[in-house]
Image 1 (cartoon, rainbow, N blue to C red):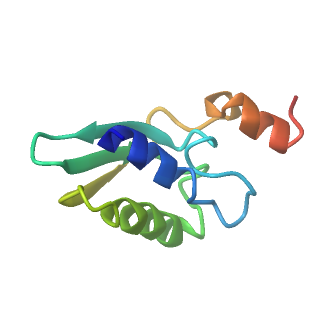
Image 2: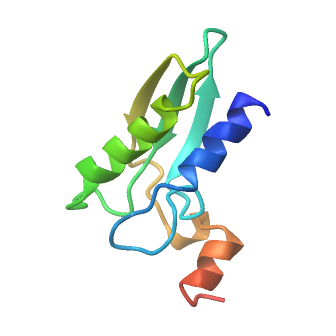
Length: 100
């Protein structure tokens, strides 16, 4: 299995504690870059800049990806541009939250 696939699978196990949807399907992950040395750079956002559980979510994302044996290092880039919106969510997430 490719490392990118493993990363997506792991990200789908990380949940926003306030929303019953994983961070990947919620659309919080904007980009995952795997470098030649298997270091990973994840660009992500939060549902709101003042999210009270930001540290928990960021730590969960970083720790989960770091636990993949092939990954050598994880750097997180937290951005708010573009801002998160429900249009970023997958169909599964929209269905889970009753938007479909």
